[in-house]
Every structure is written in structure tokens, then in C-alpha cells.
Image 1: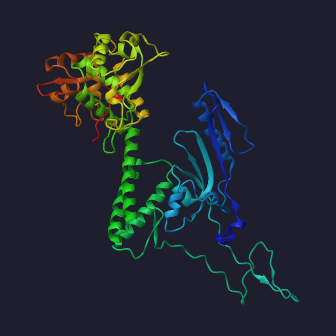
Image 2: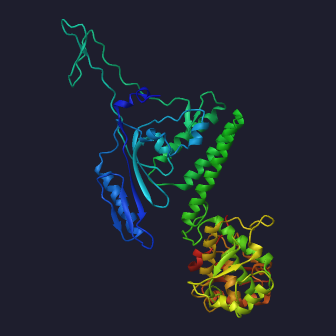
Image 3: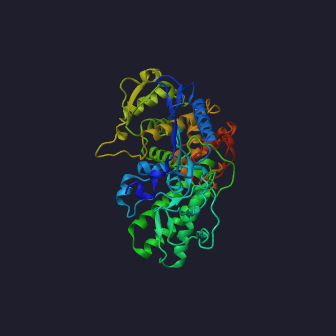
Length: 508
């Protein structure tokens, strides 16, 4: 279809688009450069990424303030690139209907999650609503309906001559008055998620629910601030409505859309939980955790359970060292270690314990244990744990990747190196690490705040039940644990506010 055939686009102007980028200047430097796609804007260099982001945002805002707003005569800039920012090529090939731009012309701003670029564009309202992360900041006014200009006949001329008067000529008795602009009413078929809701869809309640959801999603796109709880509810309603739609029509693609809506609802709840540190049904102060993702909390507990079942040596000191080494080399079976990583754990005999792990074959060292303890960050020692080295017969026992492993290892290192635990023994540190993974969101011990059974606690932290009271008292003195009460079956209490950022709570 030619541009002229699509409604006279040749007579309209192309929507504007420009991008402000933040890039590193080079290796070994914290400096960044801010550049703009507009040729008249000069590149700037800033000393840090934070200063660069602030300058980039200010530059974009200056452009937006200089504009008079989106132009109603512009056509969607997405159209020139086949709406590539929100419609994937495989989607275009499998869709039964062609994507069509529509709605008022808007000025939208899109940015990436990492804060590396910001883009402003003139596009249609439909493309803005479909583009992930797009925020509409202005909408072009709807142009007034065109008034027909009367034709004045000219004597002796065989062709009509159009008047150049700027104001309409009053209608005479032989010239009918122009018709009033028709009032636009909402009609079926409705629209939701780029799908048409047919007017013949039954039951009527399902048809109306789908149409209403489409309106609610479009209204949500116009919000100036996100509401993740509201968004999760909309996606949950959409999942139920699309599942019913699939049952009525037998369309498998609707079933897949329902599943994607369920995933979107779960993702929105997860984002809310990450931002607040709590679930969508929990009230309380927000906690910025070192590990913000619930999936990371489950990974930590999986490593804790794995070492409880596969530790090669008994005792809390061997368990702590095994846990820390497992977190360091979980994905590839090999990793680097320095002496301070071991000596900082509060072990009574770190060299002897390393020798025992190497002697039983669980750990492979390139040299002696003394060499490992003497190694420094500029010359680390490479370790290998054969049982963690993945191969065809024994795949990796963990599901997370290298980046996640690094975050988990950093979390554990920060927890055991807490400033008030530096003079504590290895059993105290292991218990502190264990309790941080067995709380609810507000820090109460146990998945539901009811406490931890001693059987579970001693399986993760292998100490005698009679020794637990002394360890608990040490954690209370270190301002790690409060309101602690140890009975013959449970340990109840509350982690202190200062260590809540280190917790990995159980989901409600």
C-alpha cells in the first residue's frame, strides 16, 4: 500500500524522533559522554555515570520544553520502520490482521532499564500504548472538522473557481448549510491487546468484560505514575477473560495469551515486591535488600539445602567453609579464592580444614593449603570441586547462572563479614547466615513468623541442641537477633532492623 493510499500521508509531515545516549569514554575511566542524535547538539563529557545521567535527562527535558507539543498533522514515526519497537518480525508474520496505527498524535518518551539512552518521538496513541516503557507526555489537539468552502461561479468560465476566503460564506437559499459534525460513539467490535472483540461474541458478559479491559489498559497507559498492584489486577482479569474466550471459541492462541497475561500479572507483583520489599498484600516499611529478587532468595535456600545433604565433613566449621566455597564455584566447578576469603570466616584451624577437604577428594588445590592462605587478590588461587563440575553424566545441580552466582556469593560474604560478627566464631556466623534465609518479610523467624523448628535448624547449622542457646545469645549481643526465645522444639524471634537488607524472606 502506498503512502498516498493510506490516507494522504504524502501531505503530512513525518513524526520527529531523537535520542540522547550515555556511553563510556573508554576502559579504565569512569568518565562518560552524553550525545544527542540532533546534529546541532554538541557532545558532552562528564566525570561519572551519575552526572552523565542527570545531564542526559536535563538535555532531553530542554528539548521537550522547546517544543510546542506534538503536531496533529504529523504521521506516526513508527510507521516508517514498520512499528519495530513493539511488534516483532515473527509477530508480523503470524498475525492474522495487519497492524494499523491509530489514535491521536502523541509525544512519548522511552528509556531503557539500564539508563543508557532516552528517546522522544511523535507517534500515534496506539503505538505509544504498545511500546514497552513508553510514557506519553503530551497529546496533539484534535483538529476541528473541515468546513466546506462554497464555490462561486464565474461568468464565462467552463471550470469552477474555488474561493480563497478565509471565512465561510453564509449559506443562501439555494445552498444547504453544512452538516453538524457527527458525534462519535463507541461501537463494537472493541479492541484489547491488538485483538478485535466481535459484537457477536457470547456470552454478552464476556464480550463487555473484554471491551472494558481494553479501555482500562489504554487508560493505564495514560497514567503519569505506575501502579503495579493495579496493573497486576488488570493482567489477572485479562488472563481469566482470555481463558474464557478460548473456551468459547476453541482458539489456541487465546489460551497462550491467557498464559502470558498470568505471567505478566506475576511479573507485576514481583516488581511491586522488589520495590517495596513486601508482597502486594503486606503493609509495612519498604526494605532495600542486597538480594532483591525472590528467585535469588530461593537459590540461596537451594544452596543451603544442597550443602546440608552433601557436605563431606561434619561440624559447623566444615559446613560454613563448604557453603562459602560452593557459592564461589557453583556454576563451573572452578573458581578463584584468596587467603582472606578463608581466614575471615572465624575458623579455628583454616589450614587443617582445607587439608581435610582436599584429602577426601572434595576439593582440588593446585598447590598447598599454605599457598592458598597466603594468596592475595592480585594473585588468587584457582580451586576445583569435581562434584560441582558439570558434565554429561552429572549436570549442574543449580539452576542459576554466573551473574546470579556472583551476587549470591557477595551476599553471603557480606553477611558473615558483618562488622558486629567479626570476632564471632564460625558456628555463630553460620547460624546468622541460616536465620537470614528463614524469615518472613518483616524479619520474624519462620516462613509464617511462627519460628523455626530445631530439627530444621540443626540440619542447616549442624550444632548440638544444647549449644544453640549460647549461639543465640551471641547473635542477640551482636544486634542480629531480638526477642529470641528458644524452647525444646522451636526458635522464635525477630531479626533486627539493621540486618533486614540481608534477609531472604519466604514469600507469603
